[in-house]
Image (tube, rainbow, N blue to C red; front, side, top):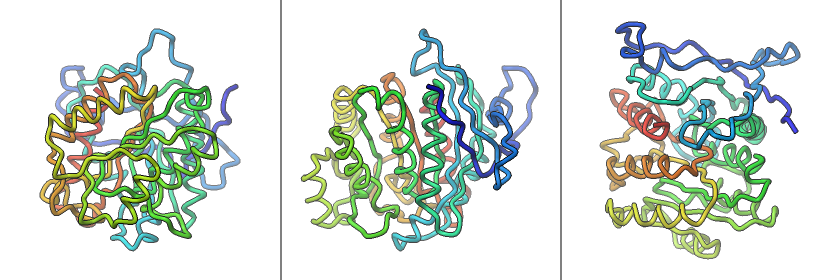
Length: 336
């Protein structure tokens, strides 16, 4: 059954970047990304565009060649609720601006569906809208890429992935988080600190095993209560101080082998503050960028990547666009 076409709040905007010529040999991201607006919805009160899914991918298409669709999740409500530094709502535009000038070497088509915007504190409604858009695009045969947003982006992503035909059809879902934090807080109100506990509850309600692994946990920034929750839920994790290239590669390989499809989420605060200063909670230690980049390539090469997102960029605290450029580089690596 074809999913109901969801709506986005802001249609895709023009991309910009350096111009060296029109040929493929000169192509950059801003020249390669096409707007993905679907069919205009005249009944949309927000003036947005309807994110109609593309035609299903051909059976010969693999996870490493199917088209990618970018969706922005402009939200910092979850960070505000979690008492962090707000500003992540501006991240989707900043990451697009950093992607635009990069040389385009991808063999897949990439389009931009615009943004879901969380306003007036309506986080849950925004997550639901984003989830519907993601499900529609996944079921249309695309690899979905969400640019957050605080890490409340992760629950929006989960709603989309969990609603997809792949997961509803019985494929084992794995959630791999590159993050300094578990984000398993037990709170009365959902926030950027609660998405993975929310996922655990939703997976249990659906009768599925919660398969969740984290690379880069900062022990000094995680209470005993959080470690206890992680152990109770069977969460697999590596501490930041244990994240050598070899150990991370083995950890990720074992986790990927245990699932059928993978949702990868990157909280940019997993990186050292010198590399990623523009986040809500800069890391005093962090996992080196080459290690994180290698994980991205490993996941992309696995053929199991269903959906990915990048979260917690805060342009207000970035230095020379450093964090946005890192986010763009990681997205570029994942789509190769």
